[in-house]
Image 1 (cartoon, rainbow, N blue to C red):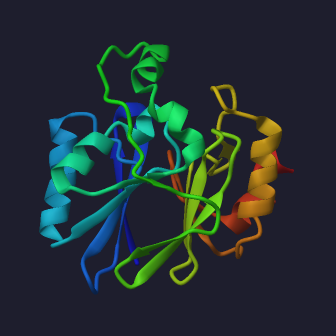
Image 2 (cartoon, rainbow, N blue to C red):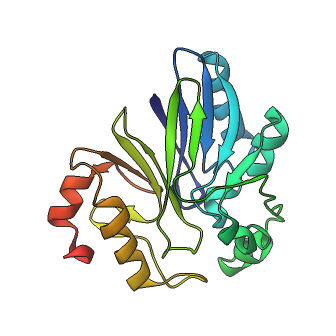
Length: 213
């Protein structure tokens, strides 16, 4: 499968479109579109590449990773997939916004399908495997494509850093344990697509990430 990256302005969130070129099916992961211009950018990409969105997937339900859920779900008529453990975050989108001084009246997130460790999400002929990586939030998940050698990790792991653990549901020891046991067991050449910032690889982070020494 192929991966397209959009960086939207709310905290520089990386939104991903994972698609199977042979069928045109795709999933939108962590929709962070906040206004009509960002929504149009996503729509233009879908039309230009003749894609069919089959689902929304959230790696977790912090505000920046889910602000575009309502638009994609209703524009394209697709279900939202996320962990049950993050349901409380999805039900507090407005409160999350106020924590950061944002006054927009964001819609709460309704999860249609709950994801758990080991679930397989099919996108055309491709597959993403769900990996639970709690610690940044209790429902944080990663999405692994073993065939095409990449993993989308949300805010669990970054290039040279890890997700913050001072927000509700965060736990530093739990997060570092999740990374070591769930992500660092993937092949070293696995491309890591984080929720913010540049891609990296599992091997690079095992060797150089100062939070995981």
